[in-house]
Image (spheres, rainbow, N blue to C red):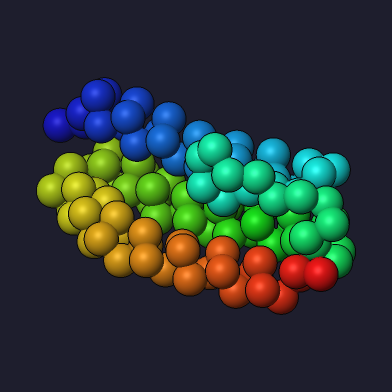
Length: 107
């Protein structure tokens, strides 16, 4: 049975993460990573490339959530396993990925 709650929840989370990626990609000022933190213009050597890399990071991060939304139509258990595994491994990976982006483009 299709769980409307699952599809709405994961679909909205996926959309939110993808939207962060698009916002970062299109942003003129440097994109930040942590809530409340700021990256100053003079910290980044190439702001468009830095923001594009941030956008790609967030869009890539959202992909497994999109997959779990689609898989959830047929198999909620498999979809929840995808979210669980991705959530456990992706947070440290996301931090490392951002640090790599920041170090690559810092002035």
